[in-house]
Amino acid sequence: MKDNFILVTGGAGYIGSHVVNLLIKKNLSIIIVDNLSSGKISFINKKAKFFKLNLLNKNIIFKKLKNFNILSIIHLAAYSDVIESKKKPKKYLKDNLLMTKNLLDFAVSNNIKNFIFSSTAAVYGNVDKIKVEEKDPKKPISNYGLGKLYSEKLIKKYSLNNKLNYVLMRYFNVVGSDYKRRIGPIKSGTLFKNLSSNIVNSNYQIKIYGKNFNTMDGSAIRDFIDVTDLAEIHYLILKKIKTLKKVIINCGYAKPNSVIQIIKYFSTLIKKKIKINTLEKRLGEIDQIYADNSLLLKILPRWKRKMSTKQSIYATLKWEEYIKKNKI
Image 1 (cartoon, helix red, strand yellow):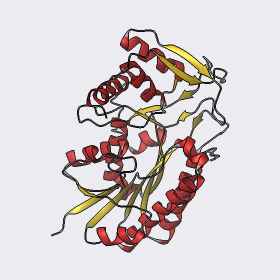
Image 2 (tube, one colour):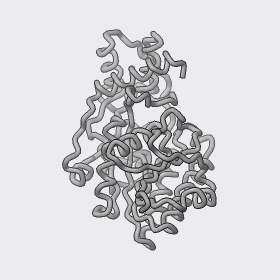
Image 3 (tube, one colour):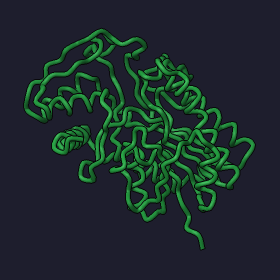
Image 4 (cartoon, one colour):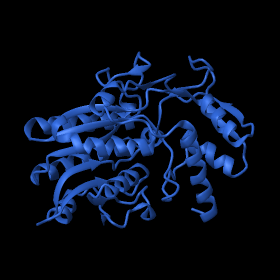
């Protein structure tokens, strides 16, 4: 009898490797597909089967994976740099969509019934609401968000003509690390990453963009969710997808923090003052947005937030210490 597998694309990446580790801990058999353009070999769980593949090549996907009995696909592989998406629209509007299409074709051809897709809060863009629901208008202001929205629409289209269950997971700002397993964010640019890197290198200052946002302290407000809690949501969704059938969910805490609040949390934890250097506000930055996660809580009534903001900060700092020590 063949093993039943879960296929995780992008399983060597920051979020994907957390998801894979949890699924393997739950005794599931996993296939990882990753081209290692941003993922790392060291993040790959040795208990998983790994294929270094380019998802833009449909023929190689069919060739390498056709003999496995795959029950579900968790599709996390994508180009995901919002700033780069402005400079290289093809990668984000065409390539990300083509990767999704190739996987959908593979799923349909191999009678795979369940498709979980990592989308983003960036699909909402500059909406008129602060607390956004899944049904709210989508007005993405980046090619990254627009490309994800295209993929969402393509998945819905495929599900109309095929017996395909899907869950579209709109991530808000993902933070934290599993520093004990040596997995965390590599790419700089995010608030938690930049703060932690600076602190570990005894640089007690941070650049922020804009001070005139329409918020309580003038800095942008966002919904930060720990990657550990996000991985747990993936596992619980995977268990229920057959009954859920077709769902879109926000993945956030509905507990927003401002940029300045986060800096103060870091400062309190390390017991040092962090100097804030304010630069010009970046074009297209939204004042404030956070998740209405009531649908998530309705679908997964047993899911509860495990990681506090303090724990996320601590884990990120520990990860940066590991990076520095091992010169990663």
